[in-house]
Image (tube, rainbow, N blue to C red; front, side):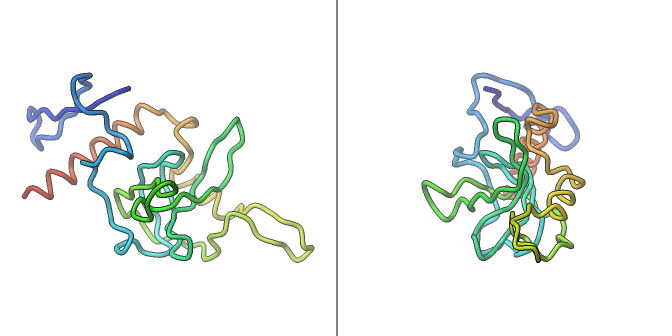
Length: 160
């Protein structure tokens, strides 16, 4: 498991280095600064730290984020709940507000006029375009490095 430490060598003081002696950065890490449930905006895209998603659109009605998940080779829309909803279902810590989602229907699936259940392709394609594919489908190390930099930047701002 990769871990992080901060080295003040660069101009921002945010250069990251792998260091196995430091605490690993995971969603369960209590030092991760995140956006509270009460501050999340319905219909907005967030960069998130979670078990299965990299980005998600917040759904107030579910207290969670709908994003693209990969499991056993299948890729589909999935909702994970905000961390503040508590165990065992709260698995998402939103890190950064990205932009408002132009798609109004945020359900993973919907029933068509022919009464067949279909995946929400419009939301899936928009999330895919925004970079919301699961880590198994992207360079996982880059994603983890991006999260580490974002968390450290948030901690740096908080200390100011």
